[in-house]
Length: 168
Image 1: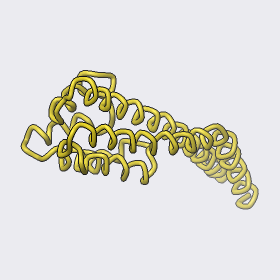
Image 2: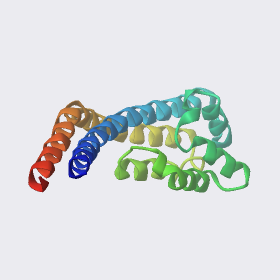
Image 3: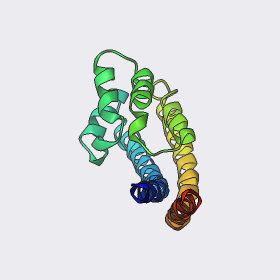
């Protein structure tokens, strides 16, 4: 029975390390998706002058429909919430479905602060600002994701083995 417990402890700690590595890798991919989505929004504003409500519809009809908060944001907007409120509340409600770091979630929420209430040029500059931020952040996440599987996976196995040795 003790052996089974030790094996379970080893497996749990090893899997915790692997899970952490996978979370970091997923945050890199999600940051890239956010950049792509913001560029798509910028394109809609730049070439078509799409209003805020139509942007949410366009996002739902595009590859971004599975973004962790878009469907909920559209539903909230349809119920009468302002664009900013719908965007922020949807992110808050669904943030457990994303691997994005807290600072990225906060920036994604801040994107909606002036959205829909400024002229076209200001909207484009707003998009550019947030695209630049997420590009820098994604680069950092990508560098972390490159080494994370080795580091966290190895740490999980090491701590699992150490726990087994100490408890045996």
